[in-house]
Image 1 (cartoon, rainbow, N blue to C red):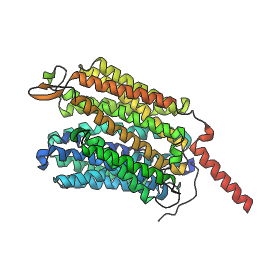
Image 2: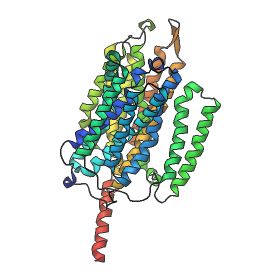
Image 3: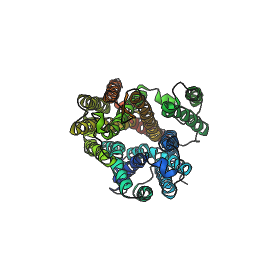
Image 4: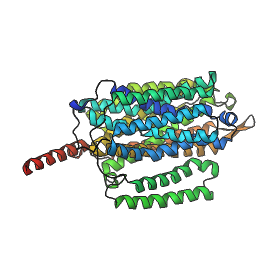
Length: 494
């Protein structure tokens, strides 16, 4: 087992062993997003295929959301302590095992457990970004981090049409056999092409903090995700929210009094870090509404007067241009961050998201306008999501990169969960009967777009309040100065 070593400065000499490291890490990020998305086309048919209720089937999404939210900061901290490549490989392996379980079973309990295992893959992106920081020279780091951040949207855009095609033309288990093979390829690629980072933060793992955070997040996200079904004023949901406030309050108190906490709350309290997390929460909300609403709107029956009645395959293809745009714009985001600073990139990206929703409000009847609006939102998401990890990299010490980025991803996840609940609440309260079935009205969709656009503007404003880049506060420079100071002291002592 590797022993914790001294903090090392990133340099060209510690670059990945070959040029495949960055593509392999990006492949892992795309695969993670694909794995989260592939179950969506199956949801309408799974009650029949698994002999279970629609409520039970919904847990295939909820279980992944909950486990991902809990495990992302935990595995990020473990990566900082025990080795980022080691933890990254384990997360991809858990994702692959979960996919194999889905391929082998039709039992809903097994499928839910398997999807919970796949939630571990949510830590892939923050761990990969941390490896890139440790291993790449500064001139290559920005574009690589931007690409890694964009893989979330790229994978989601690719996963939906891929899954829809498999479901339409093959047995649904085939889809999970395919993702299992891709997962195994990802594990092998990381093990072969990526070197273990020498940057560690020695110490004991905060088990009590991990359990407390897990309990609090499960209560919070379970209440948010199930509030629409159980009733927002039901005793179950109110009890979950009360438990979340209590447990997370106690967890906060415990973290401030622990020598080596799971999450360094003193670091989070710094404006550059804390405001970046707030912006991540708001951006996650704004981004997620695009995928949720677009898919429902284009599949709505033509009898509604606005729906296009598209198939799930055609729906996925509508979102595909957004994924391609995210791939193309990731280097643009890196260049803007290098010249103007990541907070300007984040503010610009959030503003572009708001412009995309303005397009959606202006016209959500014509297919080309729907695709255009969705693509503009995807472009803004690329700029914003690429800037967020760069903000974190510049604000925290190198030995805390994975855990800090894990918390940032957690905030995005919470934003997405709240977005899902808010959009569902708006659409449920604005429905009309079409063919005897309640269907959201166009007004409901436009309200959802307006809500998401307003949140995007709030994210842009939050980004502008983040203190400007100060080289003296750059996390990398802090680490380098601390390392040089330690070396000078050692030489003086000698």
